[in-house]
Figure 1 (cartoon, rainbow, N blue to C red):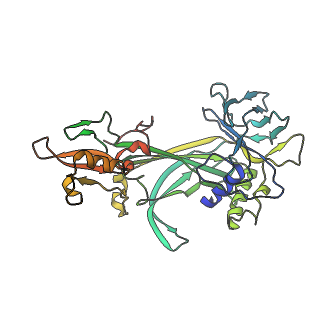
Figure 2 (cartoon, rainbow, N blue to C red):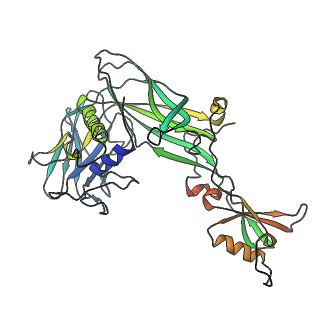
Figure 3 (spheres, rainbow, N blue to C red):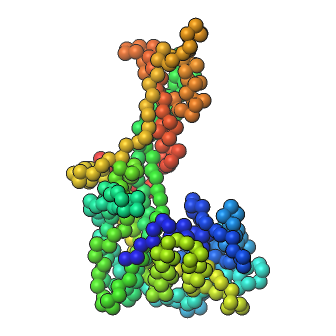
Length: 408
């Protein structure tokens, strides 16, 4: 399997200018010109499909230019036309009721800009894709820091049935996990005699992430064989809160053409060159898109067409409990403080509960709850923590995913 790591993702984003939280590196090129970037995928799934249109930019601090005024549609070899709806910000979507990909049909993507340019993709056959047999995990290790250190965790693997057609695959995955902040905010402080419960304790939330790794595979033998124990993703158990309660991963499998495999293989070669954008220009990466009136114009991106199969695997904390793996600990301090505990200059007015509350909250801490003297409502301590350790919604969502089933 060819794996393109984070370095290649940065290069890929520099080429495609897709939506990402990574700041891409874009050198000042003497003969720079804004190139159109087209990124799209259609499958046989009953969903809305998206095409993103943007243009490359010259300098790192430039704002990517989205193409918001184009006409985008798909034709197939059955004589159908299906138009995408302009959603703004360079996003164009199909109506899931009006269009769904069909295995065995050939599709062409068409893009017309208000500048009068017309672009097409090469004809793309929607190939069938075999079922995913199994998604599972095993204890494993991964080298970090240029191979000088070893990190323990689990690796997620995939088995797939034998394909009838293409022996080239691409995989993506979506991961979701439930987590709990260690010091949830349970009360609001008004004054030392008025401390009231919050309306909602944001203790448990869910996080989701769509993979940014590029996972592709080709069977060079020419024989129809199943895929066995293909590594998909490694999770360092002490590096995040993914595996503290329950974790879910949805793996999607696509059959890709030899041309599309070569496209991702070229990206791997860019990464292998050391990531130097001048050593191997990313603009040389082939695309299946072109300007129908100007064959010399370079168009970036790839129009992807494939059937899709998916399989979900869920992992609870108890599932990995006997693997003797390190456990993640939140970098959160629980501060229990009373005015008398705080160092204060002599001969000054005594520190009050209000003073203590203001000192910590203005310093970036959250008030979480009071501690009373046993059997009374006499305040003994105030509990503070960092906001990220007190409110799970700062990094996740309190809305439970539709597919989620909590542990008993």
